[in-house]
Amino acid sequence: MNSSGNATSKTKTPTAAGEWVKKIVILEARGLVGGNAKFVKGIFAAESRLQKGLGIDASRGGLFRKAMDYTNPRLVRALVGKSGDTIAWLEEKGMQFDWIPPLYPGQDPLVFHFHKTPEETGPKFVQAFEQRCADSGINIFLKTRAQSLLTDNKGKIAGILAENKDKERKITAKTVIIATVGFAGNQALLKRYLPSYVENEIHRAGIPHNGDGIRMAEKIGAATEGLDVLEMNGPAAFPLSSALSPVVKHPKTVWMNKKGMRFTDEALPLFPESANRLYHQPGRISYTIFIGNAFSAMFKQKRLTLTEAEKGLSIFKGIPIRYIDPDFVKALKLSKQANIYAYDAYFLDCAIRYKAPLLTLDRKLIASALNFNVETLEV
Ligand SMILES: Cc1cc2nc3c(=O)[nH]c(=O)nc-3n(C[C@H](O)[C@H](O)[C@H](O)COP(=O)(O)OP(=O)(O)OC[C@H]3O[C@@H](n4cnc5c(N)ncnc54)[C@H](O)[C@@H]3O)c2cc1C
Image (cartoon, rainbow, N blue to C red; front, top):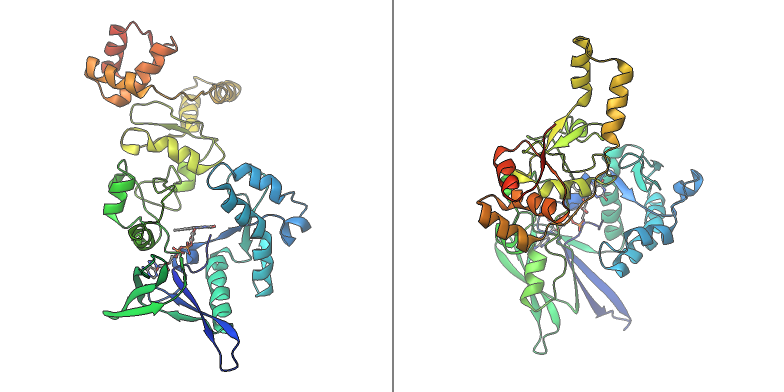
């Protein structure tokens, strides 16, 4: 997580006494600071005072190793390494962290630091940064949108062109820090970097940023990395309901796609992992099945005892799931040959390659499978 990020310009100016002091200005496009940080309830940290006090073994080295493959390892190390100090600094500024609940069932180690009133974690965090700026004489220009980066004749950064109340402002600076985050609100950039994104299939949370910083940096030749990555969480209730969503993604339910197929292990520890599996299902739709209701209906019909229901549940949960990548070239060939959707062809391709029977209720897929001598099962 970042501070009240936006475009920050830093210059050095000499004082009357001849000493050099840093001069920093912060540009904020909106009328208030904080961006999405105001929604934050929990803050990640390793080796904080609270973790040590609670006997939580959340070592920086261990957490770095867990996360180093997700993105640039240097960034991960810097973030993890400084996280405990950030919490200590916020505590100095008056924040009171006294709770580290699990972010998902079974999380180990616990790292998600809540302020004593969780709704205040984000606002208090932003307030601390605002105060720090005021104490250090750093100006924050509100309603001032950075438009483009200025460069000198050698191509080096020379400042920013910004807009405030329809007027253009030029700020000269040797260093510009861009913290305008992603582009969830920019359809053109979404189409360019994430052609698979479909607006109505995903709930969007937070402020829909325009990707201004990415656009500006690209324009002067910056390298780009990881722009095709969506930060996702799911499944969630549709239409969005914060009360229903935890029920919908409860690990003791069963999730089926539109075709009636279970597509993931509901107990995967991280919601982005299950959201990623859901992203690849038709229409990105998941139905949550409450097995308990099916069993209780059978109790009423006197067709099942409690012991049998418990056994049934443990057998179901024990079904091992192995994830296999389809061979996209072969699957596309199958899709053309059998006149079926590529999505169906992925399953057919896996069944052919692994000589495994296909479990499906889809009539068209059963017919195609038979044509390719693939055994099918119905339960
Ligand atoms: C609903 C929700 C809940 C979340 N909960 C958590 C949580 O519990 N824990 C956690 O760690 N993370 C959480 N996050 C993620 C967290 O909010 C973000 O990771 C964090 O806010 C990113 O900080 P940032 O400064 O990079 O971006 P932001 O906080 O989004 O700030 C970007 C700022 O840049 C400004 N800006 C954009 N373009 C320009 C421009 N051209 N010129 C000037 N200013 C510009 C914007 O107005 C904005 O103020 C949550 C996010 C959401 C949406």
